[in-house]
View 1 (spheres, rainbow, N blue to C red):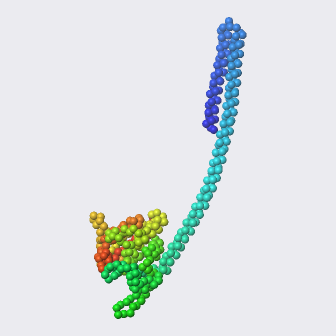
View 2 (view 1 turned 30 degrees about the vertical axis):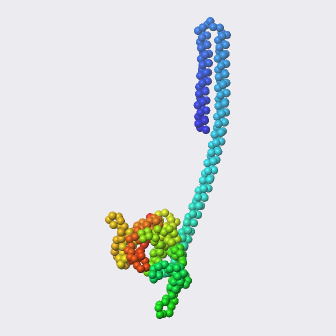
View 3 (view 1 turned 90 degrees about the vertical axis):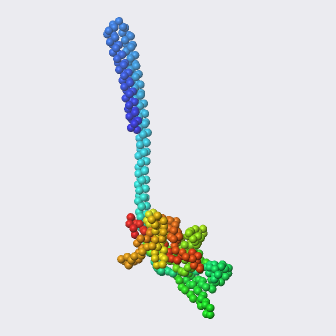
Length: 389
């Protein structure tokens, strides 16, 4: 609107100058006529008057045109002013409505922020309750629990080492040991010249020969939640050579140097399953809140070997480590190698490297029997507000 007013003002000024020039020209013509009349006495008076009237007539016409133009210009200015004034008022009303809407949004945002804070506080309280209840349940079930798993008969269980029929396997299994229920193992003991004796042994949980790897892992999975809550968790497989420790903890080893080349994931053992579940739980936490490290140790002939240590050429090789006793009376391996892992694949890759370095020696019941104890440790560091706990 300001630009239109400036334009109209400039246009009016130019037109005014134009007609002022015309008026000046007519006046000059009149003066020239009077001057000519004084110098030239021979001209007739009637001719001078006629010319004077013509000049006056042209001047009136110019003034009339100027007045008409000024009137039209004024009307156009008023019309344009009304239009732009209406647009300004509309814009102001729109801005007012936007300000009101913005205020409403700010109020809603504040309410949502308050609600989010309240929900977050309730969530933290419920999470603390869940954590306390979960770990209380774990403690009620027993901080130390012993489970027994009965494996099916294998070909080397026969005296000659040849395979036997499924019926024969079933009969031998029933004659030796079987799960009486979920907590009881029945062992039938018979010696030549002595009567058969049935012995029972009680455990927190008993797995029959037909129960799968999934079933075994279901009882282990809750411990991973306790692990992320800051509790120390240890899962140990104990038994004689060929009793199924490696199968339960890792799964079937198809090749000697390929510990995890398993096509059927249902055969995976506790370690790969626990790793998958652990990183799944970590993925639900804020990014960067957990830092995971792994160490692989072999205990052989009462000596400890670091299976992740590297030699001067960067090649992984088992290096003997010393065990020291700290001032607090705890045993520690100060030079033990810890590798940071960010996903299950990296973790299992390191475990596989350690497995390839283990001491092995064939036995009558196991061609690739390990002659040592393997200790795989996951260390989880929780990072909160830039501090480690």
